[in-house]
Image (cartoon, rainbow, N blue to C red; front, side):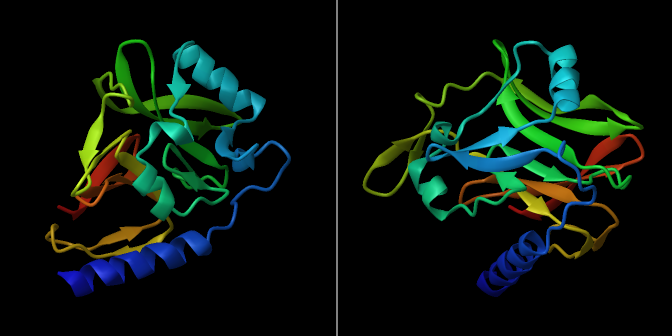
Length: 200
């Protein structure tokens, strides 16, 4: 089990480092550090699509997450715990998966390219979480914050002992990870995101 987990981590790291934007322009989404905090910056068309979907949707922020999770997380221009940027539908235009909330629910959504426009696809919906009350046992102490986070996965072959078959990704994908626990890979096929269990 330890060997398999090490291999998965290595594969994931190389996949992240190999990330190359599929569509290059000044209007690409990006994750960048501003005044010590990593934030998701969206171009106007993506902001408009998100506004039309839910005017009060708000992405989680860096300080909403467990301190220990943030200490070990690899921030990149295309990934943060609350967002992943990639070409999920294979049309050479960058899309964005964002983890956030409105006044009633936690939401996992994708701002997906649709021709020259964008639409929002809702992937998951859960009861609203308060990061200040959410806690995680760290042995001799507790930490408060969110402990479910996102990572980018690039195209290629994925194997998992929790699935009967390997998965050949023809587009970028992302993982929905529970800190030190389970992880599920999401990939877009047809008109929806499908799940592939990678850890339990």
